[in-house]
Length: 322
Image 1 (cartoon, one colour):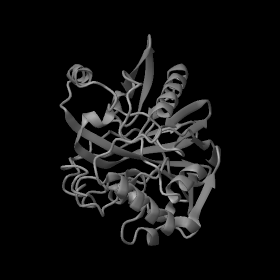
Image 2 (cartoon, helix red, strand yellow):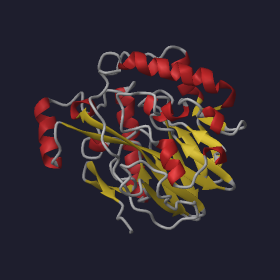
Image 3 (cartoon, one colour):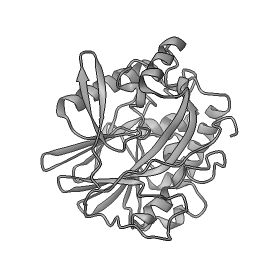
Image 4 (cartoon, helix red, strand yellow):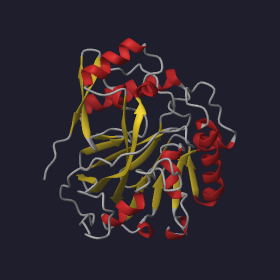
């Protein structure tokens, strides 16, 4: 796993707003690097939403986000964004409460991967937010890459979860990895495809009895709908929340940081690059038209909105509310 990344950094903290989830800080229960709350909370109608940082993957090469862009074009974008050639990727997950159900959307990286020393903090940060893993009734997985499922694979994690936990993933995603996962169109560093296959296979074996595969969409809790988009992986899904006229979308890996100004760029982890672009542009158009809040796994601001200017999009981070 040494060829996956060089090092990791501390997750960027987001301030809290009021919500009914128990998100009080508990001094002494978090690590010494916890300088502030690593979560962002809001309400979507009657639905409570908490975006939680699982940490960050540090100094990953920007070229991974733009494998079909020329070096000069990528360099110009990095200069315009005041970014170095390698920068941190946050790992965000979401906890939702609706209709008596508590839903975890994605599970982060987990703690077993020693090259990722500053990610895999899900359980610690759930505890800091006052959330007992045993209170979760459902898990929705946008896809089965290791930084979305690894948090469920740590030693003793499954034993802390409810025996009747429902784990929702699109049937196409489960079938893709069970069949060996054709990653021939990806552009990953050596070793990563085998690692992804190994971890996905382990996850499917360990959680098979809890899986609740869905075809196109499934309402996990009132107003909480998992919807298969495909693209990044064949069964990649987003989660749409809607209540009381309010909406929010969690986009998983459908959109990375360059995806707003450069929606046609391919990510090296995309299994279907052209389809990923089609999905991304469609979602961004929807988000710009509805102006609903948006969150995604690897965006640096926990929540924001999408604006459109001519033929490109713009990311508008939410204003902190201390």
